[in-house]
Structure formats: C-alpha cells, structure tokens
Image (cartoon, rainbow over all chains, first blue to last red; front, side, top):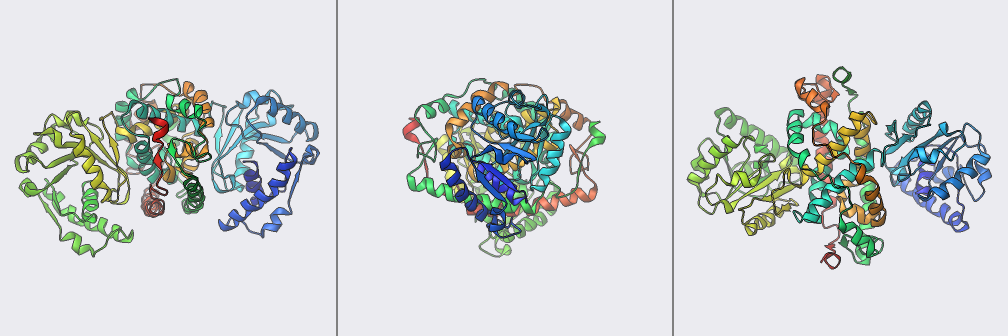
Length: 312
Length: 312
C-alpha cells in the first residue's frame, strides 16, 4: 500500500520522501513505484514523463529525511506498538505543525493520537487500493483532532483527484467498512442458513447494485427510484435483517484452513495457480476501465446541493 | 417495468404477447417498447432489425391472447387483491403446465402462490431496471414451487444474457434487497447520528465499493483481499453495527413532505428541473457504459468453481 500512496502523491505533483525501514524494501520500493507510475501513464493521469516524478522522490531508511515535510502519512502494519515507535521517530524530526496521518482501518484514531505530541495535528487518512487510481479517501478526526485542520486536508485531497469523505468522529470501521460489513453480515447469514449460495449472493450484488453504484451512491439512488417505495421497503425488510454479533463460522473455518484466497489458491472459491493469475490480471484491467468510467461521471455530474431546505 | 421486461424477452428471441389492461397503456406500450429496442440496438444487443422483433410482439387488452404461452410474467402493482384477480384471468386461459412468474419484491412468493391453480409452477422472477440491459435476475421458490421447474428457468435465463441468482426459500426482500437494505440501515444510522453527511456516505460507497463490486461481488473480493484480514475486521466491526428495527426518521420526513426525488425535484438532494433532466440523461448514458463494461468481464472471467473441498 505504501508504494501506491507514494505514487498518488507524486502524481498529484508533490515531492515525496519515502521511508523504507528495511533494506530489502528500499530496493523493491523504487521498482514498484516505477511500475505504478507506468500504470498511471496508461491511465493518462500523468502530465510529465515518469522520470520527472521519480526525480521528486527519495527513498531512505533514515527518518531524518522527513525533517522539512509538511504532511507525513503513516501506513505501517496494524499493531499499536509498532505504530507508537514510528510516531516517536517521526515527531523527533518533524516540525510541531507537521500534519501526521495514519492509513489505519483497525485502530481508532483517538487511540493512536494519544501517542503523538500535539495530537490536534493527527488524523486518519484512509486510502483504497490502488491509491493512485481510486477516488476514495476517508479523512477521520479523533477526539483531539483540530477539525479545521482535517477540513484543510479534505480541500487539499481534491487536488489529488480524490472525493474525500469527512468523518467528524472516528466510529469503528469508519464509513466505508461499516457499510460493507453490514453487507457481509447479511450475506454470510443468508449463505450460512442455506437460503442461497455464496455464488448467488455474489451475483445478486454484482449485477444489481453493481449496475448503478459506481455512479450514484446510496442516497442519490433513492432519489432516483422514489423515496416512498424505499421507505415502505425499509419498514418491511429492516426488522428481518441479521442482527448477529458473532462472525459466521464459514469465515473462521477458512482462516483455520490457512485459506488466503487467490494468494494461495485456497479461498471461498477454488482457484488453480493459473486461474489466480488470470483473476489478478482481469482485475488490474477492470480497475483501469472503471477508473476511466468514473472520470466521465464526476461527483458533480450536476451541481446538486444537499436539500438544506428539507433538512434544516 | 413491463415494457422493459417485454424488450428483454424479445431481444432474447422470444415471441411475446403483452397484456395492457388499460386502453391508454396499449397505445403507449408500443411507443416505449420501440424506444427500448432502439436503446438495445445502441448496446449492440440485437441481431436483427428492430422491425423483426416488433413483428414477434402483440399488445392486447385481452387475456385470451395468453392461451398458448409457455411462460407468463406478471408485473402489476404490489397489491395482493389486484394480483389475485390477474392470476385468475391468467389461469382461466393458459395450460395447466404454463410457468407463471411474478416480478414482486414486496409480497412473499408463498403468499401469492396460494392464489394460483397448480402452485408448483409459480415462482418469483425479479428483474432490475432496465431489464434489457442488466445481467441481474432473482429466481425465487415459494413453499410449493417445484425447485426443478425453478432451476429450468435459471438455465433458460442464461439465454436471456442473465446471471440469475437462485433462492431456495422466499426470504423477505430476497437476496439483493436484503443486502442493500443492510447498507441503507447502517448508512441512515450514521447520518442520523451526525457522524457523516448523506453526501459523504454516498461518496464512500460510490468510490470504494464502486471501484470493484461490478466485477467481483462480495466473496470474490474477500478472496482477493485476504480472508484473515476480513475475519478480524468482521470480529471488530460486526458487534458495533446498527441493529435498529425502526426506519430512520429522515425517510419518514421526506415521504411526509411528498418528496419523490428527481421526479418532483424534492429529495434527499435538491434538484432544479434542469438538474433532474441532466441526472436522468447522465444515468442513461452510464447504464449503457456499465453494461458494456460488464460484458468484458463475464462471471466466468475464469471458470473457477466454488471450493467444494473446503465447504463439504
């Protein structure tokens, strides 16, 4: 993920100082960053030759490189102990005003913030993979984050070609994961009960929601389809949805089996080595296609304003 | 919806006898069907000139036209009383073996089935709009449906260029609505609490889930991203999801205000008349684009089989 965020920031025109704390990472990073930049070139994201972007990048093991950075984005593994150490190394060298952001999706921002000097400059900035070819960005305040600072980052993110979501409070899973895990809970429950297969639940979501979601989001779709029908259907369906708090067994069973999906040919679906590779390349191609499609339908297709009149 | 289903079936090569019980509908139907067929031509769905498809269509007010039909698809409004009357008129003329299907998404198949002679030949066939340009189809058994009959319809639906979902039991909302209403419940709860705005919840879903869902569905995505991370995140997030049984107030308030979204320029978002029209045409264009994109990535991108080994 780190290299993909580096490329998103390079592509936006920033100078980037990447810290790769392991010697092997330092070697691999340039190679992967160059590959990502080549992918950006194919997506017509770049305004200059790849070499121009690489010239604004340094990769180093030395945290002192961060000294004059205005923004530091942390994306180390999801372990509080390791993140704490990294924050110490960052704050030892950067200015007191440097904005520090975490890509965490597992640890609350308010928790991480307790381990940062001047916690008001700390926030969550959560990217989707590949960071350089998705419009998604979640900017989340912890209890001590200065909301004006976070809003400034939202404005900046528009220059990164993002459509950031702003969260005033660091609710568990932020917005995107809460919405998707609500789907996962329901889908896994339906499958566990034997009412439909995994494959059929996938198809329903893929071919129904997948035919409008990329352009419309949730609430715009309701405006499109009619609010009265949705209100009736909510009344009808909500009381019957899964409210379970436990994780459906099928997930635990897969983890116990060491299933890592397409990465080791053992997952909810079965894959041969060749099929895994075909899925990888099909998804890379799809990613390019859907990115180009979303460029044709920006969020302000029409400059509609939220209906303040009705909500105030 | 009726005209759009008629066109899906015509495009698949069937002869169609459409019943339009109101004289005005009879006149409008041909016009709308022709417009839909023109849309199909632009999508390169048709193999013959539009006139060839129209020659296989009759539109009539007379149920006797249905006499020799092998399949009858009902899609009248969601009122049990009206549906009952329609079923009576259908069964009065068709053969005892004619398959009868309802497009209902509100009334359980097992309930409707009680009003049909030979209920084992009755099932739900639930289409997404526009029926001729989406791959979605939900085929649902009621308590008395012959499952072999329903599976035969699933096989037939592949010839309609659909990727049908098969439901053994008519759970409320079927699969697609249950999954989406799980999202709506969570999203409305987040917005009601003030943790994020409507607009921000839309963006999160649109730009994160919207960047992969059309190709991958839910469980394939888990295989792609890694099952262990998903299992941990499920443990972490599920217990905190909304379990409310009531409908969030914002929906009731909009309905009380007579808000019909883009159809009367009053919805969750605000629209001028011109903006409504722009959204309509932008969505029509998007629909064409996403349909063409999904054609490049059929469900069997790779012919992966469900991992029977792990599940049995």
